[in-house]
Length: 147
Image 1 (tube, rainbow, N blue to C red):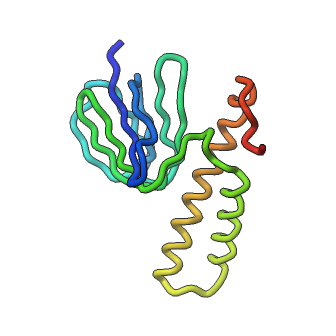
Image 2 (image 1 turned 180 degrees about the vertical axis):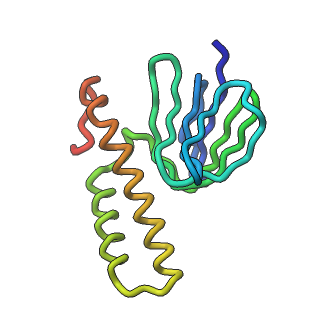
């Protein structure tokens, strides 16, 4: 089966590089599925879970928006932030969610509200990826995300 090269990078580091059968990414208006030989595309990404599948394996990443360039043989994700499921500190993400939710209830000007809502979306994406992937990590004998 044909594969597609995938790179996920942030300003700080390369988060992932490898081959995949399919990439599932959070678009601004829905989920995007990218297969090998996909038509060229450049698109913005929203906050959410990005999944890279190869064979029976899959890796999940929480991304905080960014851009994705798709070529027939390659996908490059330029993420504002990205973390693999195993990297996410659930307690820290939950604390960030609580802070953002508390700030959102306060009277904020429009600029502050937009920033708080973005922080809330990022923390929710991180929690979603970590919690959804935790049972698989534990079953595979890896450490729990709560440790």
